[in-house]
Amino acid sequence: MKIKIRGIEYFYEIHQQKEELPYLVLLHGFLGRSESFKTHLSSLSSFCNPITIDLLGHGKTEGSEMHYRFAAKEQTADIVKLISEQFRYPIFLHGYSMGGRLALQIALQRSDLIQGLILESTTFGIENEQERQARQALDGQRADSILGNFDQFIDEWKKLPIFDSPKLAEKQQSEIEQVQRAQNPLWISNSLLGFGTGSMPCCKKKLNLLKMPVQLIAGKKDQKFINIMSTMQNRISSSSLEVFESANHRVHLDQPEKFIEIIKKFIQTNTLP
Image 1 (cartoon, one colour):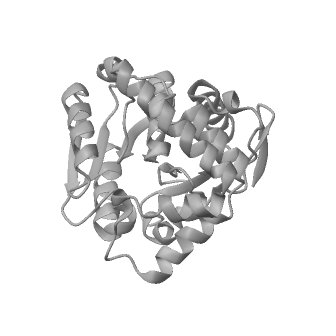
Image 2 (cartoon, rainbow, N blue to C red):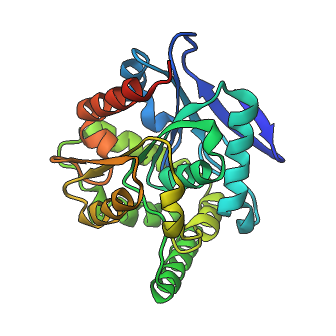
C-alpha cells in the first residue's frame, strides 16, 4: 500500500490483521527494503501481525533530492505519523542496523506508541566529536562513490567483513544484491549524507529514558556491535542482550530460526493483557 506522509509517498504492507494478535513493525537496514523480511513473515504471523515499511528513499518509497530530508528528525516524524494514523498501537517495533537507529529515535520521541522495542545490530550514534567527524567524512566519500559508480560501490559494500555470512545460501546472497542494485543511487547517496551514523544525533545520554521492554540482538562475529549494544544494555534498565553464536551483522538472515524464537518469546512475554 502507498500513502502520502509529509509530502513523501511511502510504501508499507500489513501482512496480517488478526484481532487477537499484537502488531510488529519491521524496519530494514541501509540498501534494504520490506522484502528483506519476506522469509520471516510466515513464522512471525503465528504469533503477531507483521508490518513492513520501505524506509525513505528505499524500495518503493520515494526519496528526496535534498539530503536534509533524510535527517533523523525528518524520518522519525514520518514514521511516527504513519504509526499513529494508520496502525493500531501500541506496537512492537523492530529495527535492524539503519532501521534500528531510526527505531531508537522513534521510541525516545514517542514511547506511547511502542509496547516493546527490538534493536538488532545497531547503534545510538557517535559520542566522540573527532570520531563523528571522521565518520561524516567516510560517509561523504561513500556518497560520492554511489553517485560516481553505483555498481562498483555495491561490489565493495558487499565485501565488508560485517556481511560475511558463509552459511547464507547463494540464492539469498543474490536476492540481497538484486535489491541493493535496484535502488535509486541519488536517494541512497542522500540517505547516507542525511542519516549516516556520522550525521545522526548521538542519543547515548537519553538511553536511560527508555522504560518499555527492550530486546537487544547482536551476532558473535560482530564484535563492534556487541560492544555498542552492551553499552545500551547497561544504560537501559528494561533491556536484555542476546548474542547469537553463529551470526554476523545480519542476525535475522544468519540465524533466522533462533531470531524468530527470541522475538516470539519477547512479544509473548511483554504483550499487554
